[in-house]
Length: 536
Image (tube, rainbow, N blue to C red; front, side):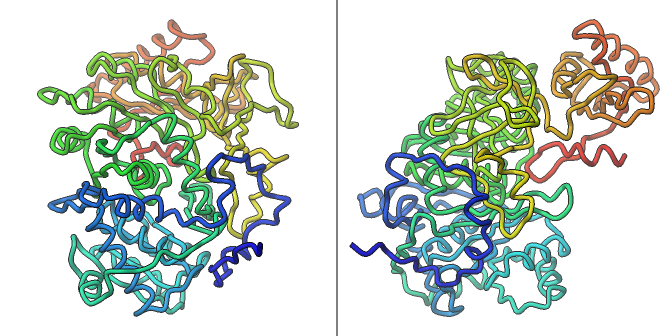
């Protein structure tokens, strides 16, 4: 039998993948690896309607609730607009710009249906950052929230490219005007499992952002690994969270996982911790994805809210401090699940829930993945020694036209850039990013451990620990602290905090400098941007 041929005739992204000998080892996954054709939208949306579940709620946001049948019709109409009015063909790239909303989910699914490639961008990006993305990915169309058009227009102008833009705004705007006259039926493109579904850009904190390429089979693979084994979703679940859909953590947790399960996703652009607490209660959310800072603040704010509907809370994006985990358990009676993943791997590859959780450990590899801790020569380290985290599984790193591929992928392993240790039975402990590991007078010091210790002090609201160059010690430990203590009393507090660390963990780990901030710098998903602390 003749094997099926890829409908993605636009091979721009395919042609810029790294050579196969630079790919990571991809481990087979039952039910995914052996498919001849696969378009992820057929499993995320089409099958729920064809199986008679079209009346179930699919997405809520603002004053809008769309059932699976309504969402499917919107997706078909939007796909018809892309193909019939703008000539989008399989393999073309489509840039999506907007905060979390039903419209962004609709646009992403419509791109998949056409066989094109989705590039979802963070709403806080400015024109110079967008221009880099446009230059690297060369989209054929952009779909943009009305309030974010200005930066996109500046980026398109400075790129010198002809990029048509369709605007939308809360169920209105040009997109919906065009959809009103478009066909409500659109056949799902029969892409191959290794045809490209999306390009996700890293945050670019160290210079030029990296474009990570993921296939249709990758999208389903994370459903059959992270979602199946950590979330175990059911159709009655209601997902909520703060991570932008432009981040793969948010894309999985707030779009791919709920839709694969036939569940409902709540998509609103931005939440404060107070608003997220209210929204969990208002929407009856059962699964919540957010960063440790939000869980920390929600515990302090929790008064009348019972969170009775919530069955699972998942923390990721940065290390979960032990005091935050304990405070959440004390306040809610629920253990926080922690997972570790990366944009390059598409989603999480390690984590645990329920009785499998251990304080101080993220967990073992999620079934389907393998993890190891390696030394600089690529040898596996003994248990409990800190080294480079290496991962392989059904997903893996493929950068778009980027020489850094050979840094991330070595000997078939994905080298994530995390400094970790692992127990004899495979439980992973996170210590820092490799470039954040502090080496002072020959000692390896985990900033996460120092942060956990500082957070035990009642006058520390938030903190972040980094290493700073020192002529005498190579590096010294520096702590940035947010506190309610008045400025005039902070020198005494600094001395007190140093003594607190010395008396709680090994004295050589104490911060030799403590600096106070009104707030810590964070990205759009709430993750602390430690690199910005080095410029203060």
